Image (tube, rainbow, N blue to C red; front, side, top):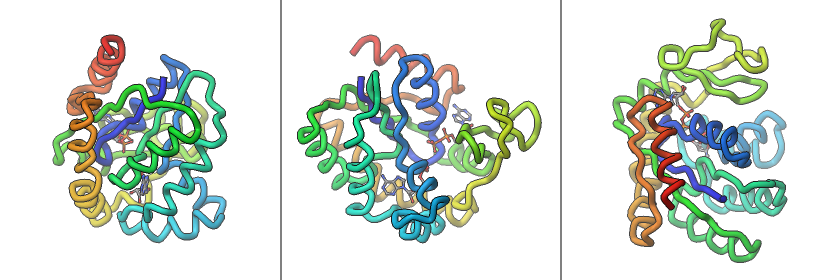
Length: 215
Ligand code: ADP
Ligand code: AMP
């Protein structure tokens, strides 16, 4: 089963992707995580991506598509994959379709997490991420047992550089103009599953599970 997880920044894509990995043994492929790893490695993708990410803008399509094409070419998943954060533009969605044709796989479900913008701002402001394993927490909604320390691996929790008030405002605006049109794109194809992302993490996952069962 191959899934696309869509939704605005902070909607819970990463959180729910981790649940899907646990339940269905899928492989999470997060474009944001790939960019952050590239930045940490200071490789060619990282140097270019860093500028766009820290200012809250999308990384240019050609560059993002090339990185995702290389990642998907590895075909290293056993039970399918979850695309978390890709595609984010119509151009990326079209390119993904041609990558799927070329590599001989299909997308089985496209899940869209819908969320109120005031909620998103609170979620992004309180998000903390593990430096070592990438697990995300929230200082209020999902705190780690010991402040600043990952429950899973003991790694240090940090706040992302694109989580300043200014960068968040740009990211939400970018979502509205460049990514939200994908909702119409996939709805027209009859393949979008809308999930209320404003619920508790557990209820969101229950709705996702149910939607995958009735597919
Ligand atoms: P995304 O990957 O879509 O940007 P995340 O999964 O990282 O979003 O979630 C953003 C923040 O909101 C994290 O701090 C996470 O712990 C928290 N969060 C995720 N889902 C919920 C939810 N249903 N209710 C409250 N907080 C949530
Ligand atoms: P995320 O971790 O999904 O919130 O992504 C963090 C940042 O990485 C985004 O704000 C963008 O700057 C960049 N990014 C991630 N995925 C994409 C994508 N599909 N297209 C363009 N930029 C992306």
